[in-house]
Length: 610
Image (cartoon, rainbow, N blue to C red):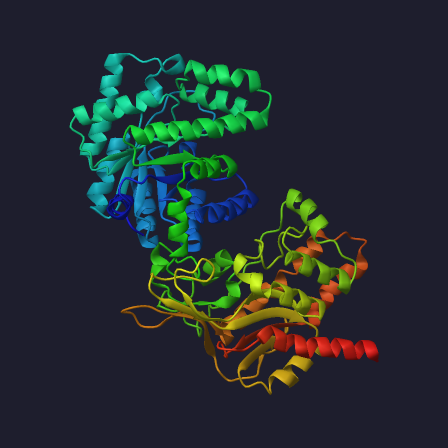
């Protein structure tokens, strides 16, 4: 992972004064909330923020969750991460262990803060015995113990630190000057950049930048304005009251008439966020830092209104690999089995303990740790109620329609257990064929079309550096009955270009070819060896099948108890059906999906005729 300070310098070399954006999140209180936030971070990560950061709860209450979120964001979403770290409720030794874990994971960006007292404590903040008294002590410790490994950010307070503020941001000038000195002490101690506390008066941000310059803080020390979109009136009043934030009269006057209309407040918050961001950029901010409050709509709208998505889209099109490559210690990984294409976090979690990992592929397949699998967490009650509507069926024909609706744009089915997100645009050219496959008894869960040479900058299929050409073989993965498997095994064995593998939940692997590893995606780039980032691998397929069959339990979870026919059919699928994958090595002119349909559709017609 690059240091944020270095990344900004490189960005400005190629983009000049074009501003950028970053997002902040906080750790949810529940496991389900954490799962949902990871999905949201992944979705918003497609906008390619300069970085994301995750807060460290009051009193260090979310320390473990914060670290896990940061590590997952690096390994699953491939984002650059800034982790908050506070002085509250920690000793020097525990802080050393946290920082060493960060270093071991490849996380090199830390926002060093004093922190808030633990929730429920009325007294002022106090240092822990054997800990740190001020953020500057934490900065000094990091530099002393870890040298230049970490890029250190610190908090900036355009209105003065909250501990010294009166109502609505009132502060004594002498106190403010002392607070500015504390900020410069952090810079002198080795901090690399600053991020401001929330504010709603941009002139205070401009004055703060000028004061920093007058104090001798160099222009190379960037101070990013923290913009908190107003999501609802009550939350805005609560947050500004807690932080003693100065609220300009015009904002108060604009909000009071609409305070009971949540949608109007949110729309005003977006408009204000855009105006504030533009003003801060005019005042010298190289980019804006958006406090998302774990919500998507307002932060996304502000970025879009600022016209900053063009930068993000370019970064997205020029992604290094077909999958999000880790920005942490897994960054050396260059190959992944295709089976986890829709479930990246599951793959990362499963492979974390594989022997000799990472070794430039995907771990030692002979490892006794290979394939260990933890059952996915059950959906929340709210998710179950929604999925009951999406996944309602009573027989095999009804289940088929659930799969077909998932492949239909705008239909009621938005996810499947194997595919948490709706199908991507790259499936458009094979969508109708996949629907027909479902109706002939092959319930598809993962697929890709053949690509015989697309530019690496292609908006749908491109990856790797510009100037390259990428290829991929047609791939299909699905569940089917023993009867359908027998037909496929018989007919595809005669098709020399198609490799076929199938396995039951309890059975041994059956394969039409002896090949153990087949590249299904590769690219040719100037001055490089051929890159083969996605493969089909027999041993990885065996590891994946445990998870793939277990995910059928999600249907059982949402099906009503009295829907015995549907529940029995799910159990039949788990107990006797095959998980199948097919690769067509003829990426020039093959038609894998039509080949499968020719076998299964003819068989279905014959059964009807009989």
